[in-house]
Figure (tube, rainbow, N blue to C red):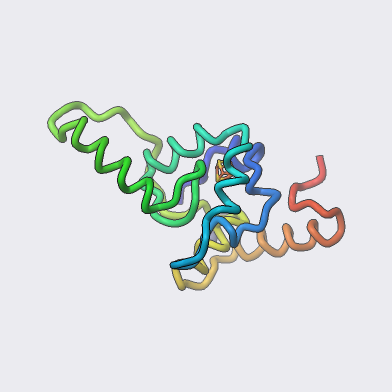
Length: 137
Ligand code: SF4
Ligand SMILES: [Zn+2]
């Protein structure tokens, strides 16, 4: 399993927002997630990470999976398969052990793994006690 870069988890505004908003069900609006991403300091990094890793689920860097698919297709046309591909970060389907990982398991209709369940429970506890999902510094 590949972790998202620590910088996203540390500086991404979504770690303080409702993770469900970043995995809108079909037909639900992604407007709230986009708004959070728009003021996120690591938006570009996040978007590029999602594109490089073929991230299929959820809003990353302000774009939905549908929008990212269109960008990937356009990139595939610009960079024919024969051309040497820039080395992307290792691929991995889930960043486990995070609150987003937990919600992504759910959005894929699978049970969350232990690290994700623990991360989600810990974030919930922090939210109730400190008003933020971020760990105390
Ligand atoms: S750009 Fe959006 S999804 Fe990416 S880290 Fe920032 S808030 Fe989270
Ligand atoms: Zn997991």
